[in-house]
Length: 229
Ligand SMILES: C[S@@+](CC[C@H](N)C(=O)[O-])C[C@H]1O[C@@H](n2cnc3c(N)ncnc32)[C@H](O)[C@@H]1O
Image 1 (cartoon, rainbow, N blue to C red):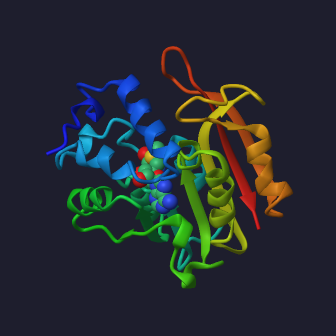
Image 2 (image 1 turned 135 degrees about the vertical axis):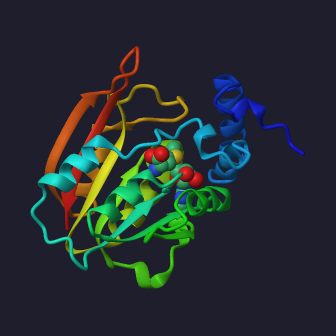
């Protein structure tokens, strides 16, 4: 058995984690390592080091304020991890599909929420089922683009935008960085120009855009953008 203790919350080694990701990225296998993160948790979703274990407060506050009729509306969660954001969307009445490329992540979701209405699936954003095209009123993305390198970031953004129904929304939550900085950092936060590509290249309308610092010490800068097709 591979020793994955360096990925566990308690024994996490940022250095070894970044080295592992870099090795996969250099072999042009940018998604080959995700399942290891979830495997390292040994069946305990609370051990997944990047999981907040609660839905994004920005998603929840949008869901509370947004006046759209949620009945029969569909939502999809990209790279759903251990499922908190998917469950939040479901609790607000959306018919939710949530997918992740990691089979272990999806297994954790199903065991964590045995009575969930969410349709949890193992799928790859880069090769999603054809009938998903323009099929979701809400697309929710949190922290997936930032863990991908170079051209895969653009490919991911395009794939996400292609899932939105006409008039539908995409909500994008991520770490942020100043333009032309931190280029070799893992994960690589998004520059404003990358967020703007949802508008400039995917022809979406920016509905709201928030730049904020999170509550970590030192605080980490983030973006939360909402775009409409
Ligand atoms: C940093 S994690 C964020 C997880 C979750 N969204 C959250 O906020 O806790 C990125 C997630 O995206 C998933 N992922 C990465 N590339 C993917 C792809 N091509 N298709 C589907 N999921 C992918 C990973 O397995 C991982 O669960």
